[in-house]
Image (cartoon, rainbow over the protein chains, first blue to last red):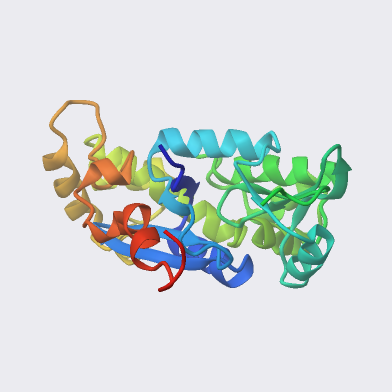
Length: 133
Length: 157
């Protein structure tokens, strides 16, 4: 069993593709039309054959409600690891990204939380110790 | 751009008001004023956080609700007025531009796709895309094959 796919609800797939590729810097992996929606996935350029993130439409009212509640309670629905959190957040802020939580030390990681413009809060974290690899 | 906790709460509350169909005449300017944020600042902030203007966000929310009502069997006129639009003609044009079909056509398509009463047609309100239709094999290629086939020649394994 492997973790190769995970998904995120987005309120607009075009907007999501633009944000996750042009702003965050992920790469589009799949874009397969499915009726009014698309099977749309992105990967990290640092690990293009690694886990895919599927950007799924939140057209289902249950998904919308979940997304709204998580956002309003300031709970991030995804977390991405970065090597240099302060550098990344400065870069993203220049591109107009809104941080609801500025970088701060939280035990073993340094983290920040941003709005993905598609209805989600996303956490970026930098482990303080180098990861074993 | 950083956002204080207080401002975050205000923006979330304003977003809820924008989606409130009970108050269709509430203007964006008034929502901003009630939130204690200046009009232009509110629009800029909202756009940076949600990727669209408050006005467009509200139109999207109303069209989404209209789609639900049409799928549930409401007439075009009923859906139009229940979601805060004032003219069936302009509602129909806007719906066509955003959804891709006219409301009357959407209603017909949605209704024939509902096989169990009080459920939503899965093509228009998908739950899980992988269950919705058969994804082609290449969609899953990455998971199984790529690691095997793209490993550089000469590397171990």
